[in-house]
Length: 314
Image 1 (cartoon, rainbow, N blue to C red):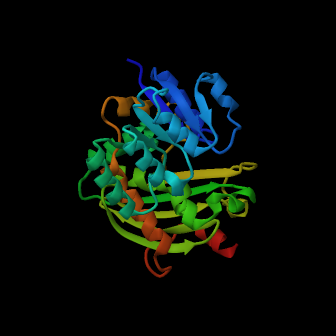
Image 2 (tube, helix red, strand yellow):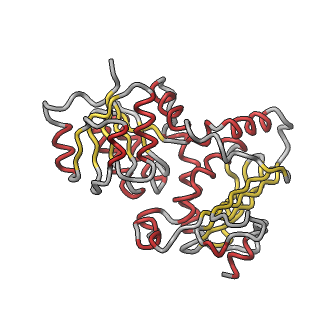
């Protein structure tokens, strides 16, 4: 029997990866919703899918006799809507597959856990870095190494964005969760996945276009910096590039720039097999970003990332 899906947030950047994953795993996209109607990409995957630009009509269709029973509702909407859309999915009798960040606050996870029990449905989060071959190899290396060793890790992620970013929902902390949540949450999850539970979380810098700090995990001391400001690109970034990403462990660069093509398809395969990442797996990263959002700035505690000086200098 073909697995049936109804997609929320079809016009965004990440939605095509979900459409591709649905198709490659043999599913059928029955219906899709977005306030934007620029979704010609659907012609390449599911041209027969019903499409709605008003949520009420989308919800009405799914609840009508015209619609088949939906198995999963993938959610690619803005961050601040994730919890509400997950709740809609569960109450509709479907499991949810939601993009990162799953929610903005740890208390949201508690509410969703109660709803899972009440509805008998499940929330699945896309944590694609956990499926990346280089990250799996790193995790296995750490797991097979000395149990008492604490590794020195540097994480720097500079991904330039234009002025549009600050006028979109992404530029408002109460909607996106801020820089650390919007572009960093999957890195914090990856670090927990590889190095174990978080022990300390210190914030060195927090602004509209950048954030930085120090994280200590069971087996790692992490200096991190994130920025969307082109002027913050470090001098050692490749000439002409608008993005620079670097993760080093004990001074050794971890290369994982490639291999992303099929990670959403692998994520869907795991969900279909009953092995999707649930609420418990995302809790650590959500607690980390929630703390970063409100914690005091403490530059006298924990080591600062070497590229932070340029960020502070503006």
